[in-house]
Length: 404
Image 1 (cartoon, one colour):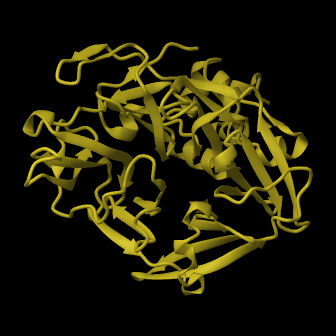
Image 2: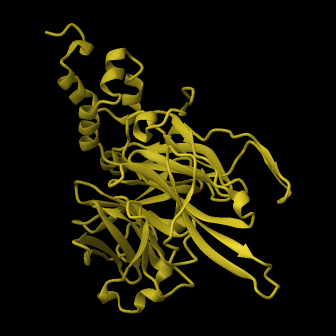
Image 3: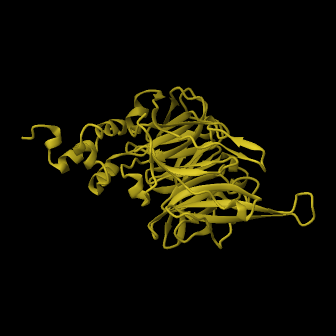
């Protein structure tokens, strides 16, 4: 018999620790060296924990133009937390670091300590933040480990009239590299002059390197920005096109091939989707890319790729006229997760402090307020990772935050 919990065989101890809630597991890592070693850079534990843990809802408070420095987590027990009551509790996980203030003479702008870093997307347990204003700096962090890495700024001196439209973080399985895609525009001349020209380009940064590299494949749309509805899945970032570009449905970028492509809409949608784009959103359900269309009914489509072929399937048709004390307005719903007990978790885009849980069997809705939240700047789903950032990104210059 083991004299203490720490003396149990490693495989049994891993099994026990992998079942703990995230905040409890983080606390256990500070108890003793045995717990820390088992949960750090341990492929067996990481695989075990990932198989038992549902993705967590991560949110940044505030607005896109006035984000806060606080990043919160709604515990992975969406199954239990969202079933037990009408309030979802938030837990502070990460504080966006302060960056040195700078004065940009050509913009006549001074950047203070409250930099406007906005949560862009998640990938493999990591979060990517970008400063969307003048500086356009960015960093990658592991909110569970409270570690972050600042990425190099792009070479703006090459063309001082560049404007970053957006940047996204992803992983290339074929290259075994984390990369950042940046889409930007260049200006030639002035808008009121003959010969004025605005062109759109793309660059890729391999995390761990010091440069941004131009790619030959130009963006197929000038409307791919941070504010475009997008989703990252299996090494590819997808954008759901909106007004004013009615001819395109979904555009994607493959991080491995470093090429853009396009996915056509389901034939059943006909041309109706072009006038209902304001009622559409995109997410990931059951490991597949999904698109929701909320008009008379809330239709959820999933797309699957096989041997280069794309196929659409309408998985759910939800009657939004059947609700429980809450008006389901016409507008986009962001699919977040399918729970093991047939429930679908969605977020109301136009009321981003409300999470909706739909029971596919009973055909009923439950609505959950995020406790103490007035507005959400950004929300993503994250499957926590206990792999140190230096090992995940294969870099050395990682900063560790003090325990909060």
